[in-house]
Length: 113
Image 1 (cartoon, rainbow, N blue to C red):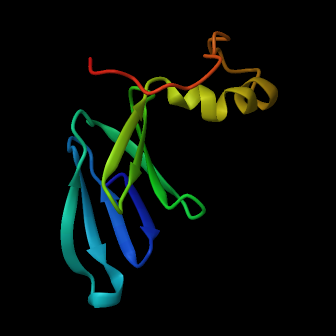
Image 2: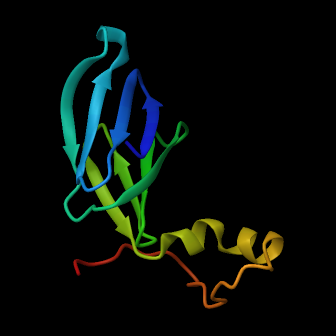
């Protein structure tokens, strides 16, 4: 297990080498409900949730960010999305790391590889 998040009485779990997000309903004795299949996801490394937008964010080891809306299971993949989310922070606070300075100017959904 690499990432766990809770949103709207559900617990979401991502595991290594899986394209499936496992879902449990916490208000029903942790009953397992319909999982979310994320085509193309592999090697997930973490998961977070935004309570304002009610979306899940999964990061993989290839620096892609997957935005998932659990209500309608809409999925978007952002290639090199970590730069958009954390790029400026990394440049400001971690200059001792050898990171590329070529951060994308915007984050756009990636097409299939």
